Amino acid sequence: MIRLQCKWAGGFAAMIASTCIMSTARADSILVPNENQQRVIVLDATSGSITGSFDTSSYAAGLIEVIDGIHSGLIACDEEASTILKLNEDGTYRGNFFKDDGIVSGIHGIEVVRNGVLVGATGSGLYSWRKNAAVQDANLRSHGNYFDVGLINDDVLAAVNIGSSNLEGYDTGKGKLLGETVEDSLQFPRQVARIERTEEVNIAVASVSLQQITMFDLNGEEVSSFDVNGGAVGVLQLDDGRILVSSTQELAIYTLEGVLDEVVLSGSGFGMINRSLHYRP
Image (cartoon, rainbow, N blue to C red):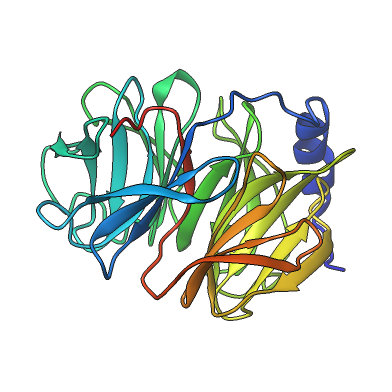
């Protein structure tokens, strides 16, 4: 059990608890980039079975995450090129989100929040940009080494800080820090995701060094964890309730209790996992 800073248990938990079981539109596809193969693997959102893939070798150097675009199409985070790419609905290249490559050093994870604002997790802090011309909005946090950001609900954005090895929560409207777990409550965290159970919501964090998925409750307290094969990179819940995990060794499905249920694909180079309503092959 981790110790909490009091501001987490107040504002953060209270905001999430008001919409504890969030009603979300279910996606018809899941996208998992593979940097080694320079492809994005496409899976069914319910069963986790592979339905296709698309090639990224002509436009991406180090694709680590693909999410739905602000209006249509997709947005891809290229860690090696330190930029964000705009893709068509079929995954073909449409252009750069930024006017110049390398505008943000060490960008790892991205998320679209309210009013179409794009938030990026980088090696030097959390940044946000407007949807229209990639104009920087504001720094959510101008220090820290962040790897991923993920929506817990419409009002709360969770972020994993690999510099302080902890989990943080932010108000999506004002960018205010709502709370954080103490330093070193995680080890080399990667993706963060919302996990729904019958009567509660958990926040899952993938950890490379621990080779596990760690679950937190809405007060930021660690409630459970389960080991995975290889260093955990990505985590996402399927529509059938099971948990899809990408690691340094494989793409696999686990039960809610953390029992390995199915290995979807073996290999290395898998990135973070995201749902998609916009992808159309």
